[in-house]
Image 1 (cartoon, one colour):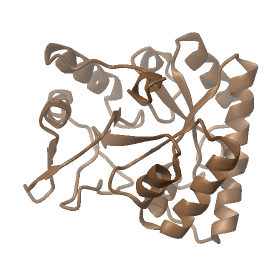
Image 2: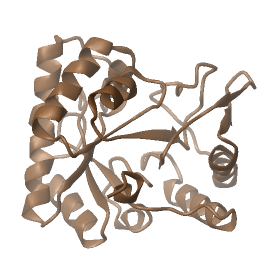
Image 3: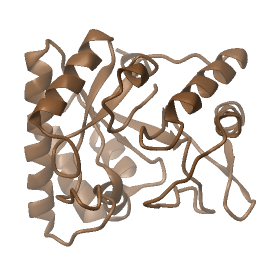
Length: 242
């Protein structure tokens, strides 16, 4: 499955199979959410809620303190917004993927992840959670029986622990180098870390960010190289056996 994070570029929508749509707290607004959901529905792209910290200035990439209950309620509020726009355009909510610093906080916080997964079990039991394989979120969702999709980050570096190196700034990347990294991960199940170590990665979905410079060239290179390598891109429904 392919993913896309915050964007208003229809050219990118046509190149992916899943869209992570910002829900207003870190980016986006009701009209932009409506437009993006409509484009996704028109192109058969899976609609995903992309809730973040209430941090427009920092684009949701700054950690904000709050109780578990407060943060889960923020997620509930944001997921509900995208779900309603999806209904409006005849689509369904395919997945929920927290954004930025919120995603990283969930990954390392078992109490928060447990509360998040319990919310999903109660309200969206058939909706997939997108997360890193090496995260509390994945382990708790899997144990609870919640559909879960593990991600590989095309345009982020990896640490020796198998997790992404979280950053607020990424420069322009070489599309062919990114594509090579993705092909290697798909075929060999490994990634080279920032220290030069090879570590195992398990995933079902490839994520890239629309705000990475040259994102269109990156996804085009990835799709071409994966096709040449015999790797097929399929919808999330097929990954979940539906």
